[in-house]
Image (cartoon, rainbow, N blue to C red; front, side):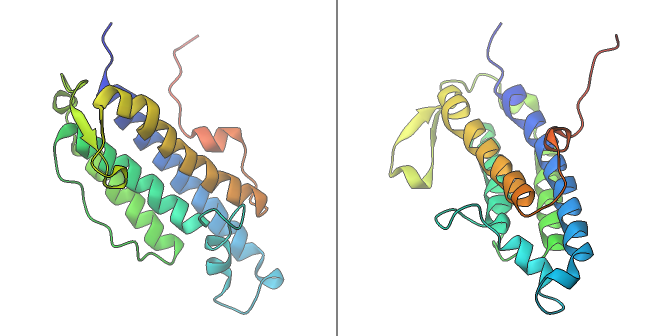
Amino acid sequence: MTFNLYEATVPGFIRALAALKENLKKGEAYAVSRKAFFHQEGQLEGDLLKQQLMFDQFNLLKQVQIACDNAKLGAARIAGVEAPVHADNETTFAELYARIDSVIAFLQTLEPSAFTGKEETAIGNPYWEGKTMPARGYVVHHLVPNFYFHVTTAYAIMRASGVLLGKSDFFGERRFLPA
């Protein structure tokens, strides 16, 4: 069996982003329910979105932006297409939902055939200063782990902030075979 770049990326990205959006909705509902414990009116949403696990890590808002960027830019690099541009100017849950929806819609336009035969294609990244990886290595050693790092960190920030999320929330919708 050959390694399928599409199956290793796009379907999982869509599922994880959909779960992330649902988790953010729970985070938003939690923040609204806790208004009495937070700062002044209108600050609540921003307080949760500004939370971070450690002082040297990005906050919840940036974790979501980076997860979206990993999914759209990584898939686009492999497929050889342009990804949608986001200005990284979101400040609300609603704006993050719109960004996630935009990325999912983009991913749904990608055809599996655009990934076929690209396993050895050199993939670069602006942060790598001219270095590249074969697409297969890029997917296995960078793209998928980095994407899930940021999705997981967003989940952990919400959990640490008191949002009631469980493992099934992280996984989102799963398709099981009939028993």
